[in-house]
Image (cartoon, rainbow, N blue to C red):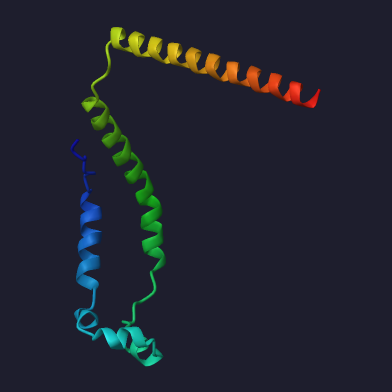
Length: 125
């Protein structure tokens, strides 16, 4: 069975590309021994100074939630168009199978319950 891949929006692609571009290539070239040593000098010198996020970015993220909601609903609608819905005959058939199996399992469990309760009464009496 083939796996379905989730489509990435343009925003997600840009964010992913920015993450890859923002990685420091010097960090990848460090020897493993220096990374495992755990000294503070290695870790503090390798980090970049990243400025704090501004409040305008937070406001745009809040406004963007509506765009994300609309995009989500559009994707849901497009996915629902791809669904192959069962026919009435198929639905009735599978419903009947479920009802029969539930009846069989309930009878099976009921018999075991009755048997064990009789066994407990015989042992305790």
